[in-house]
Length: 290
Ligand code: SF4
Image (cartoon, rainbow, N blue to C red):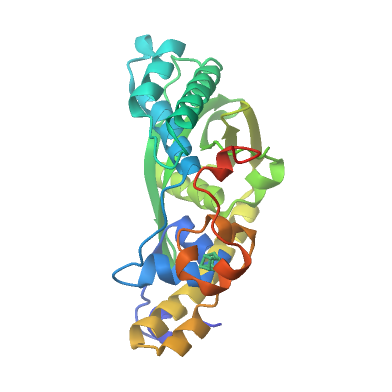
């Protein structure tokens, strides 16, 4: 699929930027049908029930953000536990018993995690929105935490992304993440300071996987982002021009994979539903689904 002139500009005409988040780009890459459901169909099709793993992730992110917003003298391990209790989201768990057990686990995990932090260290940003433009796209997103750390050659910017899933992370996850690379570039431009280091912090285990980008590796990620954006922009233009149902299905093909089980729209997608019917809303937080 190639970019339509309307999106990317005819010679001599100003280009129309594709405005997006890294998530939008990745959604196009993962499944064009889900992209259409999420970003184009209006009114949007109803989603399935909320997911327990999203509740867990949001609760942990909220508690950690709240902890950093406290005065440094109040940033204790116990305060992190209280914050988690206060922001806990129960949606998606099977019943009160399961939700309570997970709240206790989440409380323990944020307390363990903040115990590894120096309360006196002030991040440069918490849930900080950053953005950047190129000739083709305007991308923005929210960084969980942006650190300014002292290094041998002066202070350096570090993008920190919290993870709460079961899966152990590898350095490949940090190196290959389009979102982290775009955040690093956008943070660098926002703060007029080079930002090459990205880190994934796996809150359940406390493990940190990091990658030190080079300017070249960031440029490669940006090129990939622009190429995805060109495809998505062309599909958006085709959608806006008016497509028959058959044409729309062809322009936004379903990408059936095991992740369909956790797709918000699997009940609206015959192809995904047939192969991977929806998981229980709490399935992703437990090994055996119980
Ligand atoms: S169920 Fe699968 S194929 Fe269908 S929209 Fe969702 S991710 Fe795409």
